[in-house]
Length: 87
Image (tube, rainbow, N blue to C red; front, side, top):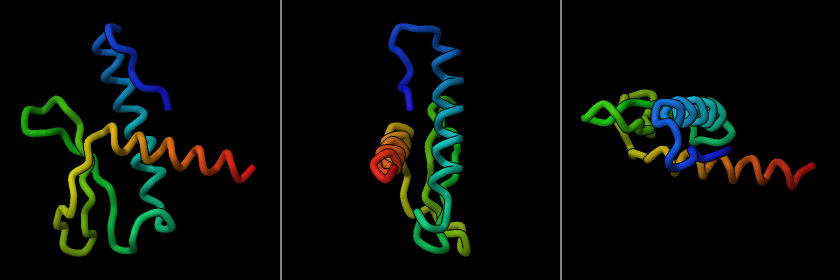
């Protein structure tokens, strides 16, 4: 996954981050990667700008943890690296 380039178009950077984050959340939400009964959900922070990812209990809806986008993208990059090693 490519991180946005500093100093570039902020709108494009935001769009790229969101696209990568959505793809990562979808990929990481697979049952074999998360504990059963848990899922990742995206949201915007209180100021409405920064995307955040919550680890949520599917049954209760309780937020178990909050993850910054960088952490989710790092997790996705590690998963992709592991997959590359399996080939």
